[in-house]
Length: 365
Figure 1 (cartoon, one colour):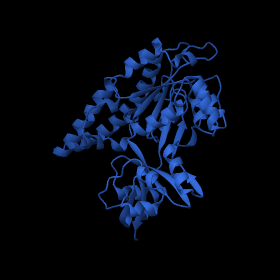
Figure 2: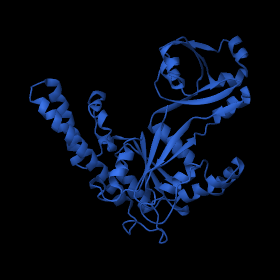
Figure 3: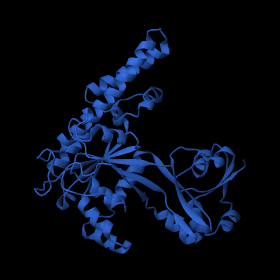
Figure 4: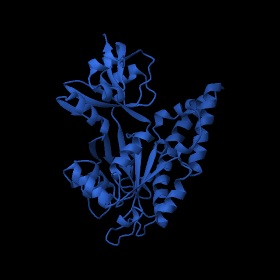
């Protein structure tokens, strides 16, 4: 399944540098607003040590990790919802992503210009929120106007839909993001077609300097206080250091570099893990002599849905799934030994795929 995450924030907060660290598709980095005009799209491989385990056991001809698209979107400024800066283009690009990484600058540096001439994470976040909320409000009001006409007929279902739309409208007018509004699944479907910007799940990435990696500062703590009721995660990262790590060729050099800064994993790996958790994603594997491959699906998907990620025919003509747990693969080493030990499980259409399953699908079309 194709997944896309948008990197957003004010100009000059570190978005393009983060993108460069994530991807070999280098975005231009410069010390002025609107350096990024067209969104840069980079496809990154998702690191997964379980792939290494399978590769050592199966010795395939090729290895294909699962991938993720990160999109570096033009910096937003106050007034973007009314077309200021590159507002309209920026907001249109956000609609197409599954989740947002909101980069917020939490460090001082006189050599890096801030668009507002002062570094204030709370104000920066509120500018982005306000512009997205205003655009969502515009989208909602257009739909409300259409539903209000239909509601005059007295249809109870349409009236209920209107009430739900007005609930979301009130939340936006109160300065809340749509993702903060507590509703049930049916009510959420009413706004599904609008692809509201503030309904997208978000990770706040606090960009700190080197000294801020292991010590809190007031700017970071202010940001934490601001988002504590949003059910959102904050990742603390020194993007400048991550950019240096990304330039290193060998795994050993990267691990040594991390140790020098007292880090167990890179901020980029932490970001990818957090994104998977945010979107409720898991990984299953297919393994054979030709190929070992990782596949991304939503947690809770059943076997036919998981098969459909490989090819639609697999889902349409699904017969059964043959499932091996990774720990059994490690213990018994070969598929034949796994079968002899009775550890190959044959599962039907109701089987809920688990993270780390090694699967083979039988189908007929």
